[in-house]
Image (cartoon, rainbow, N blue to C red; front, side):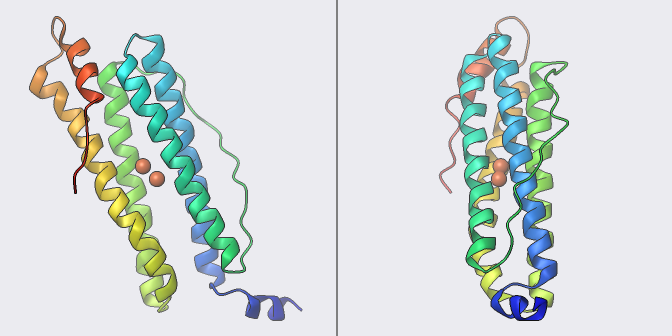
Length: 174
Ligand SMILES: [Fe+2]
Ligand SMILES: [Fe+2]
């Protein structure tokens, strides 16, 4: 019976597990961004709070994209448990450093799934993943831009206030 069920599924067990792991990573990213939005709001960085609220929503959309894909392919999508979300940051800059770290690790994770798919010639999932590769290019670009503002503008005096304002203008026209 189990084998019959597997025939109905269009993705390999290994890929299904990786995609479920990715669902969890996207959910985790969303929760982290929400926490960053809270921290920025509480510390007076309103534009950055808005920026992170938007990022949180996007990550939730990514989570659902992976989730629905698993189901569309006849797999079992697992609703993830998200834990260990920190609520405090040491500085405004640290928030953006961690945001960039997070995006880089998500890109690596998607690259890893892509690599596994290539090995087993799962071209359908590869095609699905290509949207995310493009998305990660944008996400990393924005995270890097935000961090660059700290060096370009500088944090002294009204610097942080100025940085916050510019975070609201970050766009990617890839
Ligand atoms: Fe994402
Ligand atoms: Fe992201």
